[in-house]
Amino acid sequence: MDLVLAIVLFVLLALTMSLVGVKLWVRPKEAIDRVTGATLAAQDEAAPHPSLMFQEIVKKLGTILPASPKDVGIIQRRLIRAGIRNPSALKVFYGSKVLLGIALPVMAGLAVAGSQSNPSNKALTVALAAVAGFFGPNEYVRRVAKRRQKEIRRGLPNALDLLVVCVESGLGLDQAIMQVSKELEHAHPQISEEFGLVNLELKAGKRRVDALRNLADRTAVDDLRKLVAVLIQADRFGTGVAQSLRAHSDFMRVQARQTAEEKAAKLGVKLVFPIFFCILPSLFVVTVGPVMVKIYRDLLPMMRSFGD
Image (cartoon, rainbow, N blue to C red; front, side, top):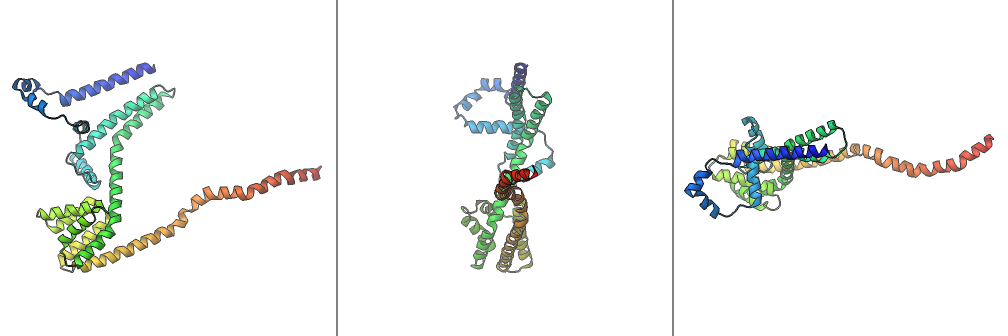
């Protein structure tokens, strides 16, 4: 029975891959290309790298999965927040969902085919593998975006201090952003990349307000949104940019200190459960254990002798 199931799964996988290959790569113009000699010029070109071929396969698989324009916009924003700005990133994302959604259930089916477990458990394992393969890329993008936002949030105080120094030394805001992007290229590459994109948008002729708003939308970091709001208000009302940045830098420094104090105050409450479940039992065994052993060896026999 297990051998038959393995053969059926292999045949289904082979037929699926064959149908996908026929749909994506078989072209009706092959005969015309051979007659006209168009394939000879293609053969003269160098063969692509295997990794590029795999990426091309994943992109072509991405065209199979239908998606609504609303979902495409949401996924595109998530990819941008994760730092993935390749034009073909969306197709690669959907292609990886299709590939993993097919490959993981097949692998799970082959893994549980030889086991003696309940058939319902086998079906549940295959279904969970399909769900994990289909929604795995979403979780990966979410984690990458969260880690990138954390890095931007960590490097923002240094970027703000350097921005204050540049503006107070006489540079304009555009030149200060460009200088901060250059100086933080190695220390904080994520925020340096974002400031570099702002500089490119400004050079392309976009208004400063729009470029700053795009910066806040791309990153979705609250602290950076506050900085953008301060810069937009300073530009709109004509106040001093250096003074506004200095005040916002002091505000962020006070906020960081208050956040550290809040975490320190919560530490005692968070340590209650580890102390109660991990430290107290071992402490109880060390302190009370020898006493209990002594009572069992000496006191109980003495009490029995007195009773007799």
